[in-house]
Image 1: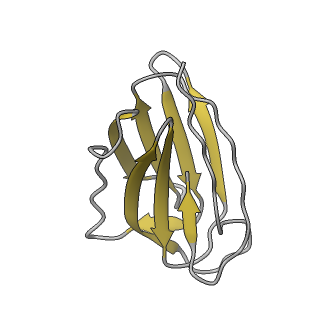
Image 2: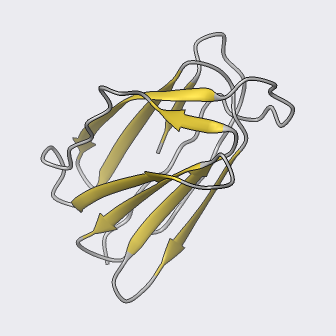
Image 3: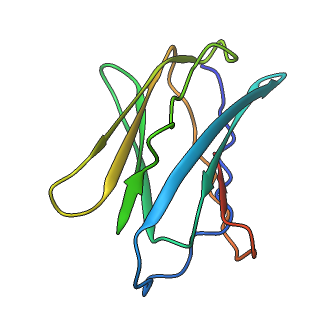
Length: 119
């Protein structure tokens, strides 16, 4: 079983008034770790969890929307099969990362002036 290190930075505020915009997703791999950086226009509450059969990581961003030019790609990581996303009726954005193997998750979060989520 491969191990993913999931680090989330900058999304611990729950009371954001305006919708954050999901602007970019960057993927990099370092040995057994894959890092995903979600760039956001503002802070947003988030929730992440894994699913099995098939293996997936799900990240929900509350009070968010997707930028028109947002076009994620899983091509830079052997652990990512596909990246899917959707704006939901409740005003949130769900990003689903289809994995090639089961992954363990480690989440860290803190505030930054520039909002980023690193998974």
